[in-house]
Length: 561
Image (tube, rainbow, N blue to C red; front, side):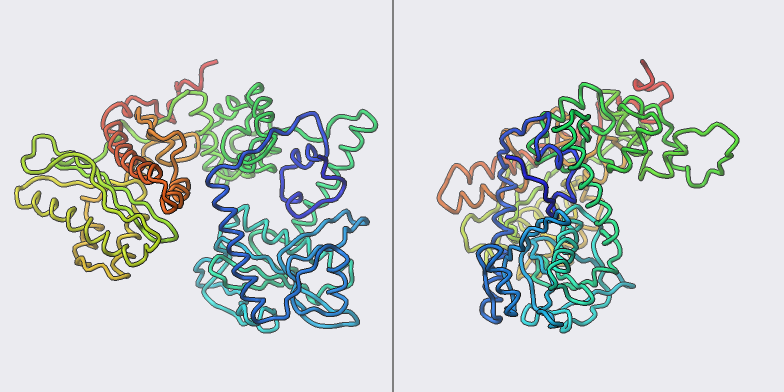
């Protein structure tokens, strides 16, 4: 069903092609079946909103209107907090606004309100020279906020940009209705239920109000040209390009077919819409076109003094406008070569080995580690049994068990380490992305585990603890992602589960709590396979990976027609 002529905040942040197709176009939408991970994120987001609503209901005069008429009545009588308001469609500006809440901030003839959004992700990070206004949920108004130093907005992810887009959209709408605060503030409740306030005219970093307005105007133009396509036979106003939003888009399959047929450059992960425009203006339309550019010149583009009278190398010109163009070139070369590539000389493609090797993986739920798994390889070593070992707990009462589970795992694990030391054997342990395992170990100690903290810290800092992710990141060039599920298949490894993944395992854990014994075994099999995957990956690094082409080879397979 067509969405009609109005734009909401999500439209403003969406792919222009998707915005046009949503109103009817040459591509049909396919039924979108949300993955287990998406469903879980939706449930968590809903639970977060309900938690905040419950708190506000107990402490504020909260009203939850049904529809636009009740929303306007609530604003006109000065309701303190309006939950999930429905603002009447703004037919003049072409705006439709839905958001989580409006908080009354004053009265100037009419009651004035500030928009609030409630999110289930983190918004801030440590930043010694920055500060943000914050207030408690008990007093959720900018007038009650104080400056919190040492924090700034996190890297501008799509989610964070959408947060600010929702605030700008609501602020515009409130102004047109005569209910906007002066100056316009907007608030974001983050995953930890911190409430952060922003004067919207002065937001720096993720998305400025000016940028939002420019995007809104562009999407309005797209809709007008789409109407001309429908009514006057004009060309359709947009064309597909591949980007992160495509992963959960109903038009993805159709767009992918179109883009694959023309070997479109946007299939190289990941560039922005504006960067795609620059590439195409320079004649870089396909993945093979991109693979031919010079990554070294792209890297050094901002240090090269350009002679306006001399021919301009596109690698230099584009390197000044396309972020990390050299990495995009290498990713295109992976596609053109049909294989991963080496970043380093053959002699440096290697993973440390040991007489006794243990691959480690853990599983968590709600920030609590409920399972430690390990796979032992000790060929020819007497007294150490090879195979998979697990230490876990599968009941709802997780928190008291976390430290006990870790102590059991660490006691077994450290015993093998000590026996190797006594017998003069080289011990090595491996994981993929050590910061996760390191954090889980330290958290268990902080929460009451009785294992010796110095032993744990000495192990973490030792060369006996090998992070496969860091090695892969240093020596292997992929076409984008560097996750275990991406790189282990290159080593010939395949998971038994049809849909392996950390987020999926959380859903399986919920099923196990509900009594599904098969889900418990599914988790154990998945954990064992993760351990086996790192073993396969390090064997590959010490052998077949050395045969990969180098990404800077002047005669690499991407140079051939």
